[in-house]
Amino acid sequence: MIKADLIKEISRLKKEKNAIILAHNYQIPDIQDIADIVGDSLKLSQEASKLDAKIIVLSGVHFMAESAKILSPEKKVLIPSMNAGCPMAEMINVEKLREFKAQHKGAPVICYVNSSAEVKAESDICCTSSNALKIVKGLKEDKILFIPDRNLGDYISKQVPEKEVISYNGFCVTHNRIRMEEIDEAFEKHKGALLLAHPECDPEVVKRADFVGSTTEIINYAKSSSEKVFIIGTEIGVMHKLENDNRGTGKEFYLLSDSLVCSNMKQNKLEDIYTVLRDETNEIFVDEEIRLKAKKSLDRMLELS
Image (cartoon, rainbow, N blue to C red; front, side, top):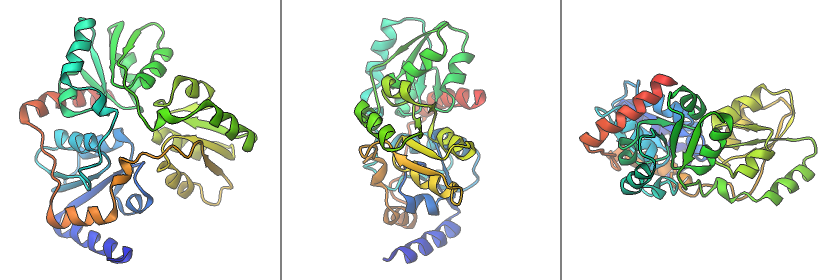
């Protein structure tokens, strides 16, 4: 089926089935263009909790679809590709988390949303890259466990030196690929450019950045800035919205590294969205006991956001 027909059929099925498509900023441009809502993990979590659609197609990776199901158990949540996982989320499980907690008894666990439902259920509160700093500051405890991203944990710890933030040794394989020489090359090639980087990057990369923030924060910063040239230190999917939002402004955007492509995020295709809408396949299920425990962590996050 050609793209125009696919888009037409997806639109028809959405109306027929009272469905809505949520897409992460890292999705391919074709999916961002047909999605009802495009955003980062925080925005997708918030929207999933208040939608009145019967079916949610979450075009992202598995933990995002799980989060939508946790917050909206009465809805049917579908993911375009079951192969769209998250290597960082797979770096920790309940057993590893319990071992980590046992080494630091009494410290609350802040769980980055890039994690499984089971891990969220074993944690005290969730966070995203958009609200992690706010949540850490909001907790009364001086000692905090941060899982699973060591890079985001390091970035947060430097913003709150009055607290001890102990990070689990996980990381985003995509953001962690960036080499320091690539930054030097980018600055040499694009004189006067600002580097906008995601806090999932290595601390040395973050240190070199002119602005550090989530995908949405990077998009908003670039749009509001009076500067004209930007080097983007996050997944390539963000480039589509940056370019769309800034047409006619004379602003230029350059991806920091060709390696900033998440193969897992790119698993989802237009054809997959059409298929799951048509057949209502790839449904996400979460055990009810786990869901209720995980929901407490997500609810606390949303309350503080």
